[in-house]
Length: 561
Image (tube, rainbow, N blue to C red; front, side):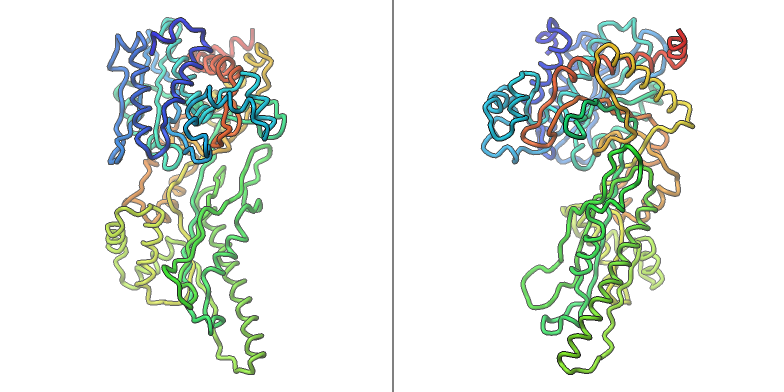
C-alpha cells in the first residue's frame, strides 16, 4: 500500500486510504471485521519503518471469539529514550447496510454513491453536499474508516521524521465496538503488558471517532475530553396470572412494564443536569411479555430494559432511581386495579373478597440476600442456568437467572426485580484537581487556539462524547465501592461477563476524542467532510501529540513568549 500513496499529498494519502478501507465490508459480527484487520496490518507492514522493524506490528486474538477477530497494534519508537507515549486508536467495525435498500451493492462504493446523490432530489442537503465534491460517502466513511486513515497517515508521517518525535506513538485498531466493545476490553490487557515490558507511560489516548453538527448550521468542530458511560437498566416483572374472565383479580405484568416505560422512556427528568453538554435521557430498548403461545390467560412475566447514559452519576445512584420508578409504578398499578375492581363489584352486585394487589420491589443484590435467607444455593443456581443457555443472548441469560431464582422463592407474591445487564460502558472525564488531567486540558486548549488561528476553524471543547465509544474502557471515574455495587447487580458477572475494572482504573489513560467531521453516521447518507477531516484534523492531532510528548513545560514557555 505504501507504494500507492508515497507520492501523494498528505490529505490525498488519507483520502486514498479512506476509500480503500470503505471498500472492505467490516460489518459488526461478520468475518469482514477479520478481513479489515488483516488489511490494516498489511498497510502498516508496508511502511518503511515497520518493514525494518517488523516486530513493531502485531495482532492480538480476541479470547474465545468465534470469528477469530483481532486487535491490531503498531508501536513507533522515538529515537530518544522518552517513555512518554500517545495512543492513537479507532474501531474497525461498522453497522449493517440494510438501510441502503436497493443500493446495498453500492454501500461500500464511495464514487457510485456520490454520483447517485448528486441527482438525488429527495434531500436537498445531501444533494448539495454531493455536488461540491467535498464529501466522501459510504458505509463506514464517517464511522470510522476516515478516522483510521488519519491515524495511519499521521503515523507514517512521524515514522519518516523520527528525529522530531519526543516520545512514542502506539496505534491500536479494535473490532466489536458497535455492540459489546470486546476488542478494546481485550486490548486493556495488552496495553498493560506494553506498559510493563516496554516501559511505556501513556500520556494521552486520542480516539478519532466522528463528530457532527449538533444543530442546524452549527459552525463548530467538537473536541471531547471525556466519554459518556452506559448502563442497561433491566426489570424482571412477575405478575399473577388470571383467566380473562377474572382478569381484575390478577396482576398483569405488562401493565407494570407499561407504567415503568411511561415514567422512564425519553424522560429528561432522569437525565443528569450538566450545563452545555449533550445529555440524553433513558430510552427503552426492549419490552416484552413472556407468553410463548396464545391462550386466554394473562401474562405471568414481563421483561423490560433501558439504555441509561452515565455522565457523572454512579451505578448505585442509577439503581436507586430505577428502584424508585418501579415502586412508584407498582403503587400506581395497585391503586388502579383496586379502583377498577371496586367499580366491577358495584356493577356486578358482588361482595369484595379482599383481593391483594401488593407488588414487592427488589434490587438484585437485595433479592440475592432474600433468596439466600431461605437456604437456597444461589451460586449453584446461577451456574446451572448459565450452562443451560449456552447460545442465548447474554441479556436473556440474565433474565433466565433471575427467573430461576424467583421460581425457588417461597414468596410467590408479584414482584419486580431490578438489575443491570451487559454491556456496561464506564464514564470518564478530565478532572482539574488531577495534575496530568489538568495538563491535558491545557495542551488541548493551546493546540486548538493555534490551529484555529491558522485555519479559521471554529472549535468547541465538550466534556462528554455524546455517543458510546471505546474510549470508555481506557479510564473510569468513580470509587471501588461503585465498582462493587455494579458487580453485585449484574447477574452474569464472573460467569459470562467480566470487565477488568481494576485494570482500567490502574491504566487511567486520559482519553480524548478528536475526530473526523461529517453527517448522518449510521444512515445510508453517511458522509465525511474532506477539507476538515483530511487536512485540519491531522494538523490538530499532530500539534496535540507534539506538545504532549514535549511536556507541559514547553507549553508554558511558549505561552509566556
